[in-house]
Image (cartoon, rainbow, N blue to C red; front, side, top):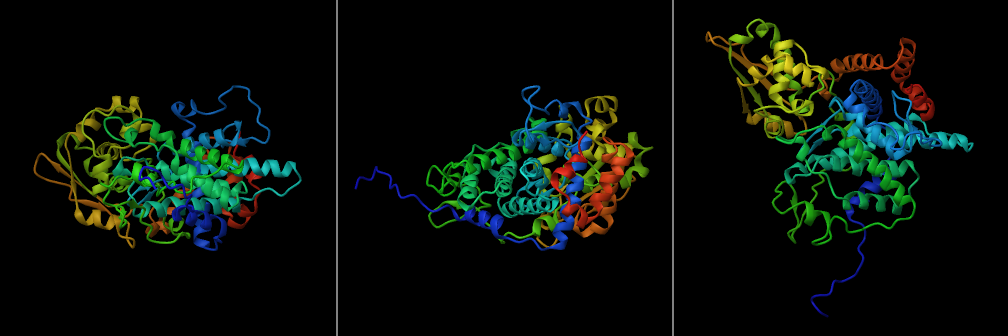
Length: 494
């Protein structure tokens, strides 16, 4: 046989795809901790979306592409009156959820925000529930939404544990697309072959670059990229349920597969197979680990690697607020990931640039005692030159222990420390925060504050009586789980 002829023996689906499909289709969620955390995650994620509706740069993206479009049983976008097809609704929900960089986070070899998947999950569940009620069938309940959230968190988070997509220039929203595809296909009734087909298309898609997250190109695409990815998951699930064939060897195909094309041989974080192809390293089976350990952003709308820096800066504020012009140097001690992605010098071009700058996110609470979303905007930055004056005095250094414990499974700290030095030779002493308020180790301390955050975010959109009704339902695990999705969303729209 000629050496120039390809052997056309169609393979079985790659094992990575089969493992995800089997998890989604067969795993039974029984963990009370995972379900309780998912309930809190649902509250927090919806609240972040409601708060984002205060920002015109976000709301300009929302709504139907064709004004006046009527969608029977259309999915609703919380906090608005929009009723859209599930793909665009997923885009809109995902956009508002992620806009302020305030929803939950997962940090490992790759990072990301697993609650971004709520865009697809809630859009599909709301649409299907309305349709099923109209057909005389039982609607989906919020329990199904919580289970889908747990599974999406798990898929995104486990794939991120030891596989660094950012080191080959790919954006973490790839994992949102894969997770949303899997759980939305299940919600839509996919069988195993259809689910595998949908997953294969999620990987064969061209993947987003990280360009828009890094200096000097950081910009607002990072605020809607996850909505785009989650909506793509809904679209791919729909394509597969219409009978579209899959691509079984999408990951492992020599030359043409995901590994060879997008996971270059220079990626030393990946497992090297004997034949020289680097593949995903998956160190544990899928279960409920990620939801149970997810990180909540409770106090600050800030990139998570800087959360503890913000806490330390707030602690230092009383000592420095009256001596800002006497500061000679500010030393931020941090971990390698923070240095690699959010340490910046020079002019910051926009709000998206500022909320990914550890120096900016430290300077604002040092000077003002807090950090809120409005403080990233151009008008605030322009009115307070002290922020850039403080940035110019900052030195960022790595503590190897912080870097090591960031990746240790029993710790997963996100440590930062700050010390301020004055021109008279005195200093504040170093203030160190190793675990942010949203960490699993601080759940008892954090959840009451998360609930306060949710109530405050509800109040930006609804009257007091509606806020109280929504909060009371969300606090009651059993009642919330039993609530039909369409009835739950009824409470969230204008």
